[in-house]
Length: 134
Image (tube, rainbow, N blue to C red; front, side, top):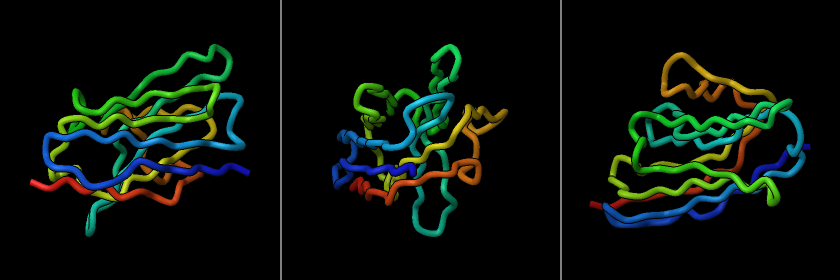
């Protein structure tokens, strides 16, 4: 059984930084994609950043939404089964509930920065709130 547990949300002023963490259990081997989505009130859930890892080679690629490129950095610590999202230069438009997501197998889209839609992900965390004030 796959479980994802997020932490690290909070409130910050514009220009500030936050780091989100997601600890995964039950999803340690093979090809997989893990990353972060966010959903603001009245909006659809959108992909923010994803790490997609091939099973045979272990090679990983990182994918970012255009709106966060250059400001957010996704990384992973395989020994800890943890994915991080470092968010810098935050703006009020980044305010949302952030969800950790995972799926078996790689997934790269031809649009949206290469991030496949939320419907392609099988496993979700409970969400953590990020609020950026002007």
